[in-house]
Amino acid sequence: MPVRLLDKENQIKLTLEEEKLWRKYYHKNWTALNREKVREHSRNSHYKRFPTIREEKNRKRREVSKNRTLDKIIRDKRTTKNAQLRKKFGISLGEYEQMLVERNYVCDICGNPEKCENKTLAIDHEHSTGRIRGLLCQNCNVSLGHFKDSPVLLRAAATYLEKERRIQ
Image: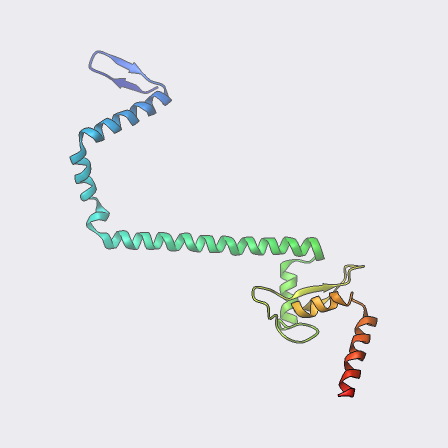
């Protein structure tokens, strides 16, 4: 246990909590009694004398913090995406990225890259079996959904559009 000297004859043993309180009290009183020393020390501190060093150090600290935050966000997004792909389709993020490369990052139906910002090609799958059919852009994926993935409805829609073109 720490020992505090009050004077040469008297000594008091303090617990850790009492020691912390005593130091806080002592520091507060010493600072109040020695304001000029504290101000002088503050004026002469290394960073006060060399502001460019302080600014450079702070800039580096902010940059490192920003990079760490961005790295963590990117890592977290990839981890989340990987978990979603595994749960929903049974494939890893690596397998999905390989599918993107094989298809040159374009939709299997329209042949265009994804137009929606911050979106990637959607995985088209057969709802009854879960079998993956391909990668589609947002428009084609939603369109197939509206036609309930029915080839009959899609053929009827195509026939309708072709008939309308012939009339014009």
